[in-house]
Image (cartoon, rainbow, N blue to C red; front, side):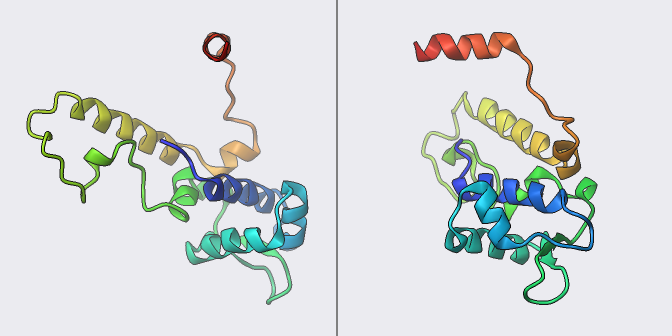
Amino acid sequence: MKISTRTRYGLRAMIEIAGAKPDSGVFQKDIAASQSLSVKYLDHIIQALKTARLISNAKGKKSGYILTRKPSEITIFDIHRAFEPGICVVECISGNYHCDLSEGCQASGFWKQLNNLIYNYFNSITLDDLIHGRVTFEDESFSEEASRQKA
């Protein structure tokens, strides 16, 4: 499963907007500058976040963006869903794909369980968790293993 660039930048934009003063709003040009993005590319991201009703204009058209809900009420899945229809680690478990091997597939349970784990994880982490540093990764064995695999 690969997370799209739009989703990654959408998450970063949401973190910036959530970190701003509640009534002031964050300007698109400021987000673009801090994330090294073109305003034009960020425009698509902002539009998707607005369509998903995660952000809105603070006070009129040229006022910057604010969250529509508290950061504790917005999950990573909410942000992901603004850019992708859902989470699906392999095509064969999606509802609209027909696989001739699905009846006797012994791997499908694994893929479905992995998909559920990712979905539940995305739904269990909020924007507030990210802002306050409650999501960290400190497993040295994983980073050592990743280093060995790259070598």
